[in-house]
Length: 501
Image (tube, rainbow, N blue to C red; front, top):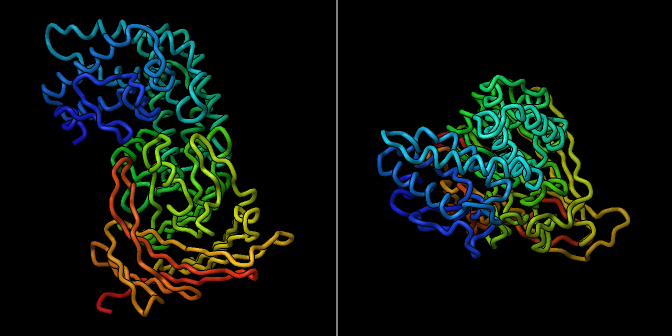
């Protein structure tokens, strides 16, 4: 569908619709995210998926236009991240771009790609830390492997990628950016780079092998029953087939861990029910450009259908939507005085909880989780504590959200709180029992009841960015009230309803 849109003249980059005939590759009004996506040429995959003569003509015309518009370095188009992505995309799609008799694009493309590769060899370290630098190094490894640069330099590029693996991956194998998308994007880079090295007959650094062995189960950790990703920390559901492909190419069948001990997430699988808990603070400095204030947020799914979700992630830029989706209110957790538990700002996270703690206990298949964060202590004097119980059959999930006066803190005499349960877009919800409960029905007919004590439920509007750049109307259940200086506790239970009841 994206490829057909480009053939028809519409190229969408980071939520920005551009004319596909001759886009302005370095337009001043492009957001940084849109500029990177436009100049990365990764949308060539979409045209290649269409595979028609018209799609090939459009792809070739866009490559030719970029080459003509960028004969030498200029800011934006030649930055390290988009250059690495572009080299990889051009080489991966070279057969599609160059097929046919009397081809005239091949030599032209290779000449430009060689110039870009030489520049990338000098500039890859200028890519921002995290995923952008990994993408730059993948392009450099492709360039050495495919002959744009001398193969003698492949070992150095491979060692540099191994060094980034050591710098960017946590002890549990998860990427430092924490979210589900980061695991998917990082794994894709490492499996691509490993294949390029192996095809070129080069040795693969042990750090690259270890990175794949950690990232593959980390990616499985974040998958819901529908095959998509949980919406934590700048994540969208992504294409389940692309996730399957990345995992297959990883050749690492290790199952998902029960918990991410360093990335700080909990995952509970009980029969057909999956429960996720964010038990950590936003990513550390240097990896927090898109960090979310989602401490203690949850997601719950049953089978292939999602029940409770977060709102997802917007364009990877600093637009109002992107910032709003990073706020605590866009997550299924508690907010205090309409204030986020961390302070996401463009390009980083300022204030954040000094301590987010969690414990886990299991017995006879039942799981108890307890987590707390002190992000509200400096502002209001309260700790937020969340307790969860998941029954072994997955049909009974109970929670308790408490505001506890922190020892030695100045506690606000009163503070308004809101506990949000953002609902999946296809879910139907209705308030029952005068606000003491809500009835939830899925598209397939599953029925669940959310019961609450200590507050009243209200049904309100929400939004879902499960698919990046595509907003869908959704609803949220909100339990709101006021906590006095002594604090407050709100208990809730989500239980499956047997058919016919």
